[in-house]
Amino acid sequence: MADNTRDKRLKRRWEQIIELLTEKFSEGDEVDVEGVLYLIGLQEYGKPHDHFKKEDNVNLIHVGLCTVLEPFGYYRFDFIDAQGWPHFELVEQLPNLKPGEQSILVKSAVVDYFVRQGVIS
Image 1 (cartoon, helix red, strand yellow):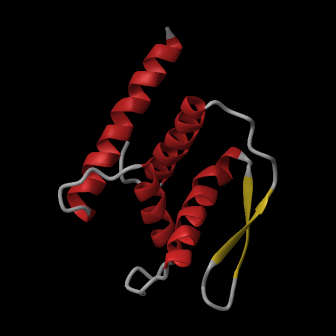
Image 2: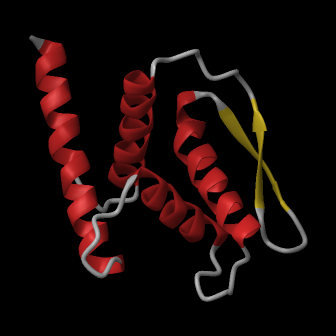
């Protein structure tokens, strides 16, 4: 029963985040998980008005992923380089998860990030 309640709460919070980000940053298309991680990476990089190359966009998604998984013990912030990019150290290998389980882990981490940021409760 507790799992079902937790799943419903995660789903509700995730939908709240998607609605908020879609409204603020998208022109009609719903923001997906990669888009959310990209926006988190952009926030953490701190230079949202820079122009980014394709490689930079991939790096922003990676920064977003490392940021949300850091409290789960998978990554640890290491340093900021001369260009302002945050770097993380892998602390613990991510577990081998089925795609659905990966999605739940990432969504849970993203929801926790937005709760810590005070964006949702």
